[in-house]
Image: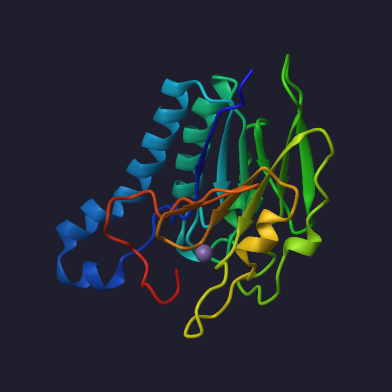
Amino acid sequence: MPFRFVHTADIHLDSPLRSLALKNEELADVIGAASRAALTRIVDLCLTEQVDALLIAGDLYDGDQTSMKTALFLARELGRLHEAGIPTYIIRGNHDALSKITRELVLPDSVKLFGGRAEAVSLARASGPDIVIHGLSFREPRAPDCLLPSYKPPVEGAVNIGLMHTSLGGSLSHDPYAPVSLPELQASGFRYWALGHIHQRAAYAGTATVVMPGIPQAATSTRPARNP
Ligand SMILES: [Mn+2]
């Protein structure tokens, strides 16, 4: 029995667009709604495809600008998955590390929000190998060190999937966020690394399939490129 999932990251739900909003209020409204539309369409996709899980690899929220309205919208959307029996796995990235609303909001039981200590969650399945999902959230917006050594080791005999928010190798002009190299991820014993942070899609085949899904909205990034 195949295990099928949707992996996304960097939704930046209700991210404010300050510079655009100053110039053209109408356009800012349209683009401002894009992050919500993206999440709704991701949930629709999960339902249509009847996947086994949704993975969100950080920056679901956009810091402390978001309100309870944002949180209620999120709870409603993830509630649609909950009703369909599809669990959601979430880690926090640099933009939602300190988000208060995710701490206060009661999400459906089927939503696993990983904390600042690594955890590995086993999925019971009727047939096929066990699936183990590993996650670790940013405790604070800065994460200058590699997080890989903090993850639990892969469970032998199971298919291990890791969620990580990382700038990967990064570039010298950017601050590193939980830097890690592709060879390190490939050698980790995990089967799939569900990454987030860089708003440009990239996928690397190998012993571990490593995927940076990019921002789920259309071409326009809502964040300055320097600090995704
Ligand atoms: Mn990020």
